[in-house]
Image 1 (cartoon, rainbow, N blue to C red):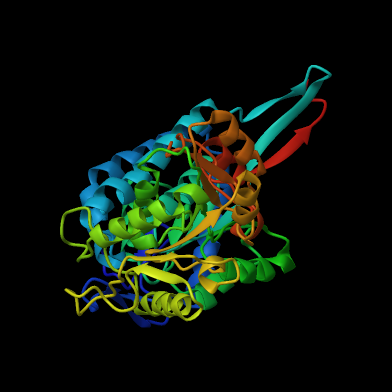
Image 2 (spheres, rainbow, N blue to C red; image 1 turned 90 degrees about the horizontal axis):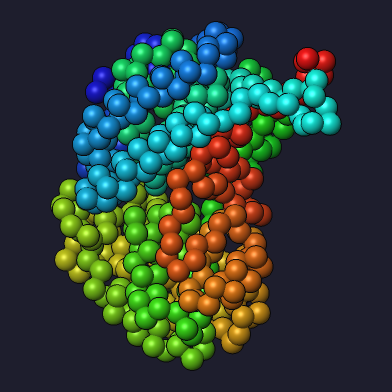
Length: 477
């Protein structure tokens, strides 16, 4: 990897205009594992200028050539997967097995999904038989600012960069300053894929600095952001003056509705899913709603599952969970666990503090609360840690009402073998995704939410549409 204080602009690794050392902390041991520079307005302007200069040429490149470039990127990514896993595990605390299989694997999954969608996409087509001389043409948006989070680095970077690239856009990527090493490695991969200078650029920085400059920049045509709802709101405000396109993938507070007839493993699977990636997933099922007749049994199973969940360093192999990403995140989780206790939820597993065998690192005890009520903070706020809230419901209507009782609407979950009930409930849930009975979503499925979970859709053909303008041309012939 090049010197980590550098940025990738116009096909070259360049020094920042105003070096500003920023330590990257390994959350497993609280030690500095790298140093980066946070970009200035001048660095951001240089990256945007490079992207703008490259746009006309890249937009005019035949689709087949852009697909070939994405295929080269996929080959490089796959070849360097172990390096990427090590970077992600070190910077944000994903256990190395999870980093290899799911964190890095998500990038391959979305590269393949984007390629499959691009190969079959109708880049232009007739409006219809009623208007044979009118053509609908899809064209790139322009210069795209891509702002990505730390929790699933390659999932989000690839979900933005791959469709932006193949649709003919140029881009400036700002990865999270908390976990920037994977983004720097991805920039190396882009360089190795032999793209024209300026098509892809990377500037490290924080939200108030580089993020704000990109959001308001008059030469940026689109901002695609994944992160907190609070930050998404600020980006929307900053982008309003230039009426640029804004695509947002924001927070969540997913409900996992477990009906009395659900599979006996549904509760255990729900707890494990909530704790995956140390609970640092916007689509985590953090509110478990259980039909009254199975409620106490579910609480016992959740307690046992949490107590059997091991916590340890990200460098160790195994199925344990790692640390929270940072001291700030650790303290936020601790405060919310304490808030749950103070507001009267029944603590059945975990609690505040680190697990007993660990005294250094941002480790959180896997925590389960029962008897949570809708007025409690832990019911309403996104915790982003291994903390599960369990509530009983009386009937189908009650379950739907509780699930929808949130400003978020990203992913909800339904557990029942009754297909008609599953379909009925899924239609009533106000969320962009509903996962039924643990069945994963297919490649190219649209990822995105309702309400304050955002307005974007990523993945497959839906992801291509995010980065395309629609043009109607009459008299085409």
